[in-house]
Image 1 (cartoon, rainbow, N blue to C red):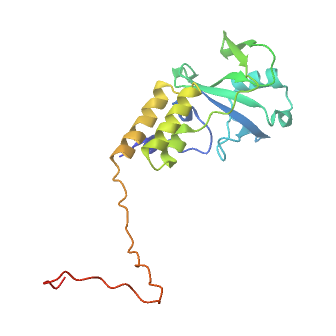
Image 2 (image 1 turned 180 degrees about the horizontal axis):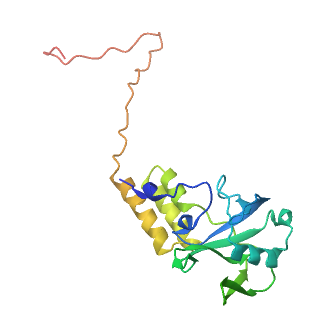
Image 3 (image 1 turned 135 degrees about the horizontal axis):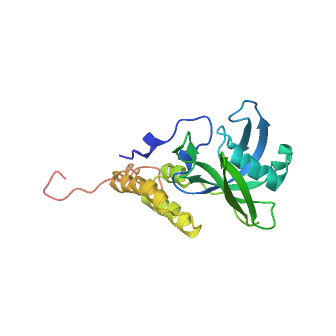
Length: 213
């Protein structure tokens, strides 16, 4: 029994829990200014339809410094997001989303930004390689396969792509175990009509002498 789907966060936006399996690279499709004080910007992502990324003020500052303040120009650009356990809310470390890599920058970007009153933290964002592809949702892909061979293929692609973190292994392993224990389908053998003779009749089954068979 795979219980991983019972801890998937039910939310209408991307949040830190979606990144428990490790960093993921996303493609921006649209940016909307929705108003409000806490989350005034929604960054829509190709890989998370219906769950926009609503960056914190710190991340918004990073994105504007890297890409400029014209949100329409961000469409088609890519970002790698990760869960930072040290992000605080009301003085408590609750975890939050930070950005580690961005496309469309030529060199590492270092910014000293105010985190709390009187305290500044340096954030470094690395250029995203031109050939870097958005990170697949390996957990969803593993759930979609029908046999252990398909599960192993998903596992190997995650490993080859450098995405097979301990957290992702913890999510993929129970899916594979469940596939190992599923009963194999029983083949159904359909009756085959015997071939007809040249005259159109059906061949007769010879009886065994001295028997009724």
